[in-house]
Image 1: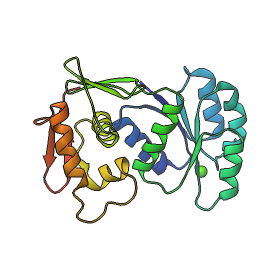
Image 2: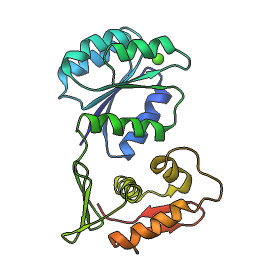
Image 3: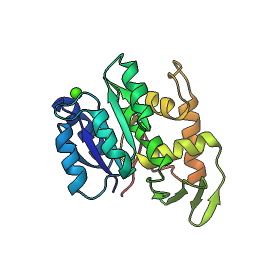
Image 4: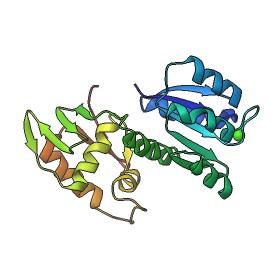
Length: 220
Ligand code: CA
């Protein structure tokens, strides 16, 4: 399980992040000031990722960064809107990325995904609904037989595989796979889902959700 340390003094933001990450299967620990975060880093088994607010009581995010750097744990800074100087400083201090508050949890999850992949902390092989996916080589198998997918189909497969039992809006699917805003009335998602279903044998597994989009019905 991926362990995330959330260092954020604003409780509503901290809670929102914790809830969204826990739903995705991450193990979260929260610290509400810099000193508490430093204590946790000393005592607890190593974290895989730290989400770090800049403005914190006691020890601020930048000071804490000096402490974190030797531990080689990837950091994503949470910065206030418009604080460009903070973002630059954060990246110079060795942060992997930053995200500007207020942010969408989908955006946060996407950034976490990128950072963890860069650090190779994500599961390399996923097995979902009878399909085996090797995310390092981007190869896919069903019942031992390799399946050839287009890049778009592969991205779509991975998105559903990483979000089992979750109703995904067409808009969200489009944003995550194609990037950018969903063009009104687009059939791209539906067409690709139909092809993907046939190729990987998910005709009864990847279900349409009325007026929403799709949900992958699997046991995990
Ligand atoms: Ca703060």
